[in-house]
Image (cartoon, rainbow, N blue to C red; front, side, top):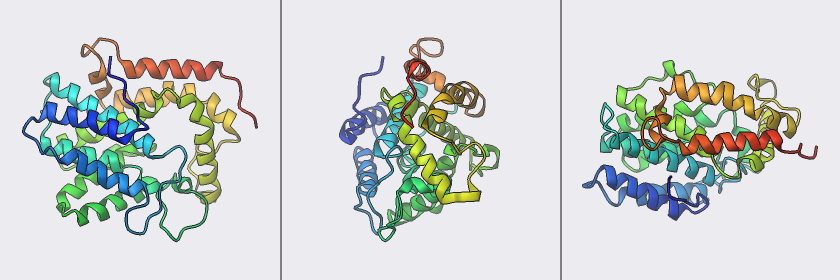
Length: 284
């Protein structure tokens, strides 16, 4: 069992990620994790250049922290299992930056008074890669490192064509797949995931209204009940298939013991899916 961590508390998640990082790389930069968290907390809090604080109600900073915590745990367990190719310190650092920045595409510029950042749902991956490039250039990251972060972020798109992402090497691809896995598992395993589905519906509805004819197929819902009723199938026919086939079964490193022990993330998701099945329909 993983130790409980309050994902509403950035400091608590930072401590857990720092523990994983130094557990893998004892001689690593002890200031890297706090520095990265500080940069991204500023972005989501409205303290970065001409961007407002995050106002998307589902894809908020806690959502990012849920994925970040899951990814750090997954990669730590993978290294402990002695899997190859071995994870390097630099790749972990770039992967952490990627997952911390993967939803910055929901942030609005300060002069944007229309709606919430949820309107960017269908374009947020591309916007996140652009945001990451801007921030990391300012922090003096190399073009190669920025491209690595962008490629990892591209793994999070629901309809991402993974074969078209120009990964620079196999390890970059692996960390990108770990990011994609953690983004899905981190949110769906959260204790309040079923309660937040109506909020997720409002984000889809705002994005569909904003995008009009450009709304992707399968992304328009009549009401929150339709989204909720489709959640078990979303897990069984999309997410579980994606993490197994597309992302190479990396979720197995979350099992304790690896590879066939109980997997706390999967158990929590399955409990959430059952809860959704039994949950009364939300008011229309």
